[in-house]
Image: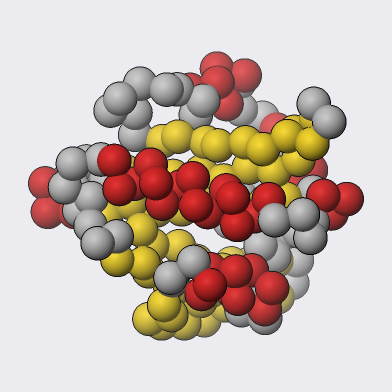
Amino acid sequence: MLEAYAQHPDAFTSSVEERAALPLSWWEARLSDAVEASEIVFGCFVDGDLAGVAGLSFEHREKARHKATLFAMYVRNSCRQLGLGGQLVDQVLTCARSRDGVLLVQLTVTEGNHAAQALYERKGFVKFGLEPFAVAVGTGFVAKVHMWCRLN
Protein backbone atom coordinates (compact mmCIF):
# COMPACT_ATOMS: atom_id res chain seq x y z
CA MET A 1 0.00 0.00 0.00
CA LEU A 2 2.88 2.38 0.59
CA GLU A 3 3.78 1.86 -3.07
CA ALA A 4 0.18 2.66 -4.02
CA TYR A 5 0.12 5.85 -1.96
CA ALA A 6 3.41 7.00 -3.47
CA GLN A 7 2.58 6.24 -7.09
CA HIS A 8 -1.04 7.41 -7.04
CA PRO A 9 -1.42 10.12 -4.38
CA ASP A 10 -4.65 11.39 -5.97
CA ALA A 11 -6.31 7.97 -5.65
CA PHE A 12 -6.05 7.57 -1.86
CA THR A 13 -7.08 9.69 1.10
CA SER A 14 -4.08 8.54 3.13
CA SER A 15 -0.54 9.67 2.44
CA VAL A 16 2.67 7.64 2.43
CA GLU A 17 3.93 9.56 5.47
CA GLU A 18 0.78 8.90 7.52
CA ARG A 19 0.68 5.19 6.78
CA ALA A 20 4.45 4.58 7.01
CA ALA A 21 4.33 5.86 10.59
CA LEU A 22 1.83 3.18 11.67
CA PRO A 23 3.08 0.13 13.57
CA LEU A 24 3.14 -3.25 11.86
CA SER A 25 0.36 -4.39 14.22
CA TRP A 26 -2.03 -1.90 12.57
CA TRP A 27 -1.39 -3.45 9.15
CA GLU A 28 -1.61 -6.98 10.53
CA ALA A 29 -5.02 -6.28 12.08
CA ARG A 30 -6.37 -5.63 8.57
CA LEU A 31 -5.46 -9.19 7.63
CA SER A 32 -7.80 -10.71 10.21
CA ASP A 33 -9.90 -13.64 9.07
CA ALA A 34 -12.21 -13.40 12.09
CA VAL A 35 -15.87 -13.90 11.21
CA GLU A 36 -16.84 -10.47 12.54
CA ALA A 37 -13.70 -8.49 11.61
CA SER A 38 -14.47 -4.83 10.99
CA GLU A 39 -12.00 -4.70 8.09
CA ILE A 40 -10.74 -7.38 5.74
CA VAL A 41 -8.05 -6.97 3.10
CA PHE A 42 -7.81 -9.36 0.16
CA GLY A 43 -4.68 -9.90 -1.89
CA CYS A 44 -3.87 -11.47 -5.22
CA PHE A 45 -0.51 -12.88 -6.22
CA VAL A 46 1.44 -13.31 -9.44
CA ASP A 47 4.38 -15.71 -9.33
CA GLY A 48 4.31 -15.60 -5.53
CA ASP A 49 4.48 -11.80 -5.31
CA LEU A 50 1.67 -9.61 -4.01
CA ALA A 51 0.19 -8.00 -7.13
CA GLY A 52 -2.97 -6.34 -5.85
CA VAL A 53 -5.16 -5.64 -2.85
CA ALA A 54 -8.67 -4.52 -2.00
CA GLY A 55 -10.19 -3.87 1.39
CA LEU A 56 -13.70 -4.19 2.76
CA SER A 57 -14.88 -2.45 5.90
CA PHE A 58 -18.12 -3.07 7.73
CA GLU A 59 -20.27 -0.59 9.62
CA HIS A 60 -21.09 -1.55 13.19
CA ARG A 61 -23.38 1.31 14.11
CA GLU A 62 -26.96 0.05 14.35
CA LYS A 63 -28.40 2.38 11.72
CA ALA A 64 -25.64 1.77 9.19
CA ARG A 65 -24.91 -1.97 9.57
CA HIS A 66 -26.46 -2.64 6.18
CA LYS A 67 -23.51 -0.92 4.44
CA ALA A 68 -19.97 -2.01 3.70
CA THR A 69 -17.20 -0.04 1.98
CA LEU A 70 -14.68 -1.18 -0.59
CA PHE A 71 -11.41 0.64 0.09
CA ALA A 72 -7.72 0.64 -0.88
CA MET A 73 -8.15 -1.04 -4.27
CA TYR A 74 -4.77 -1.29 -5.99
CA VAL A 75 -3.12 -3.46 -8.63
CA ARG A 76 0.57 -2.97 -9.42
CA ASN A 77 1.23 -1.39 -12.81
CA SER A 78 3.18 -4.44 -13.99
CA CYS A 79 0.19 -6.70 -13.23
CA ARG A 80 -2.62 -4.69 -14.78
CA GLN A 81 -4.67 -6.07 -17.68
CA LEU A 82 -4.58 -9.56 -16.14
CA GLY A 83 -8.09 -9.42 -14.69
CA LEU A 84 -6.84 -9.13 -11.11
CA GLY A 85 -8.86 -6.01 -10.33
CA GLY A 86 -12.06 -7.75 -11.37
CA GLN A 87 -11.19 -10.78 -9.28
CA LEU A 88 -10.55 -8.60 -6.25
CA VAL A 89 -13.88 -6.79 -6.65
CA ASP A 90 -15.64 -10.14 -7.04
CA GLN A 91 -14.04 -11.38 -3.82
CA VAL A 92 -15.05 -8.22 -1.96
CA LEU A 93 -18.66 -8.55 -3.15
CA THR A 94 -18.76 -12.27 -2.27
CA CYS A 95 -17.49 -11.51 1.22
CA ALA A 96 -19.99 -8.69 1.68
CA ARG A 97 -22.84 -10.98 0.59
CA SER A 98 -21.78 -13.53 3.22
CA ARG A 99 -22.32 -11.05 6.08
CA ASP A 100 -25.78 -11.08 7.63
CA GLY A 101 -27.66 -7.86 7.07
CA VAL A 102 -25.23 -6.28 4.58
CA LEU A 103 -27.28 -4.95 1.67
CA LEU A 104 -24.81 -2.80 -0.25
CA VAL A 105 -21.18 -1.95 -0.85
CA GLN A 106 -20.11 1.61 -1.48
CA LEU A 107 -16.85 3.13 -2.67
CA THR A 108 -15.23 6.28 -3.98
CA VAL A 109 -13.04 6.59 -7.04
CA THR A 110 -11.05 9.62 -8.15
CA GLU A 111 -12.87 11.60 -10.82
CA GLY A 112 -11.14 10.98 -14.13
CA ASN A 113 -9.94 7.46 -13.26
CA HIS A 114 -12.00 6.05 -16.12
CA ALA A 115 -10.47 2.55 -16.05
CA ALA A 116 -11.32 2.02 -12.37
CA GLN A 117 -14.79 3.51 -12.70
CA ALA A 118 -15.51 1.30 -15.74
CA LEU A 119 -14.39 -1.78 -13.79
CA TYR A 120 -16.71 -0.92 -10.92
CA GLU A 121 -19.60 -0.31 -13.34
CA ARG A 122 -19.00 -3.73 -14.97
CA LYS A 123 -19.27 -5.26 -11.52
CA GLY A 124 -22.63 -3.59 -10.83
CA PHE A 125 -21.68 -0.32 -9.13
CA VAL A 126 -23.68 2.79 -9.95
CA LYS A 127 -22.60 6.41 -9.52
CA PHE A 128 -24.70 8.39 -7.07
CA GLY A 129 -22.74 11.57 -6.54
CA LEU A 130 -19.61 13.61 -6.92
CA GLU A 131 -17.72 15.08 -3.98
CA PRO A 132 -15.72 18.14 -5.05
CA PHE A 133 -12.52 18.99 -3.14
CA ALA A 134 -12.58 15.49 -1.63
CA VAL A 135 -8.82 15.03 -1.25
CA ALA A 136 -6.04 17.58 -1.03
CA VAL A 137 -3.15 16.61 -3.30
CA GLY A 138 -0.15 18.91 -3.30
CA THR A 139 -1.50 22.43 -3.77
CA GLY A 140 -4.74 21.28 -5.41
CA PHE A 141 -7.71 19.03 -4.86
CA VAL A 142 -9.34 16.08 -6.58
CA ALA A 143 -13.01 15.14 -6.64
CA LYS A 144 -14.33 11.69 -5.75
CA VAL A 145 -17.11 9.84 -7.53
CA HIS A 146 -19.36 8.02 -5.06
CA MET A 147 -20.66 4.64 -6.19
CA TRP A 148 -22.72 1.83 -4.70
CA CYS A 149 -23.71 -1.73 -5.51
CA ARG A 150 -26.82 -3.42 -4.15
CA LEU A 151 -26.01 -7.00 -3.18
CA ASN A 152 -29.27 -8.84 -3.88
